[in-house]
Image (cartoon, rainbow, N blue to C red):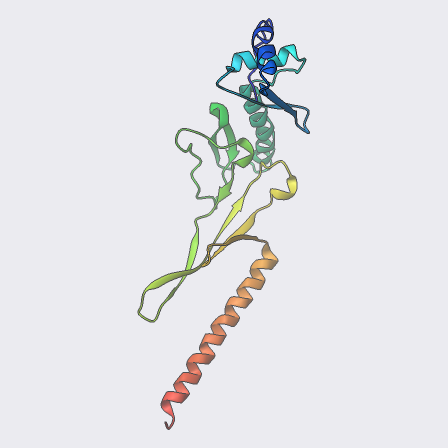
Length: 218
C-alpha cells in the first residue's frame, strides 16, 4: 500500500522510472487486488514513498485512501453494531475499548465478561476484533507422584463486531493437553461432557478391579 500525496505533480517518473527500466531492473510491481485497490512492491533503495506516489499517479493508478480514513471507517461500522447492541439492552454496563488509529469503540460490557478492554503496548485492537471472554477454567489431574497437570481448559467468548454475522454468536473454546484449542457449540460441549464422564467411569472401573485383585487371594 502507498500513502496518497494529492499535491503530486508527477515530476519524478521521468527522471527516476525510465533510467531504471533501461537498466533492466524491475523498479516497481503494482498488483491489483480483488477489492479494486493496489498493492505495490518497490525497491526502497531506489525510491521513497513520496516518489512511489508520484509514479503511481503518472501511471494512472488512483492513490490509496489514507490509513487514518480506513481506521475511521472500520471504527464507525463497528460502532453502528455496538450502538444497536446497547439499545437492545437498556441499562447495560458500557465500556470504552481502544482500537486502531487511536480510536475508541463504546461497547456493551456483558456481566460475564472478565476480559479488560485495554491497549496492548499502546495499540488497540482492530474494531472488528474487539471481543468479550470469561476467565479460562482448568481441569487438572494428578500424576502418580502427586504432581498436578492440566488435562483440559475452557472459556466462553463472543465477537459481536466481526464482518460475518454467522461468526458473532457466543461460543466456547476448549484447549487440550496437546495444546490444540478448538471452538465448541452447545451440542459439542454436551458430547464432550458425556465423553469425560465415560472416561471417569472407566477409571472407576479400573480402580474397583484393582481393589478386588488386592483384596482377593494372590
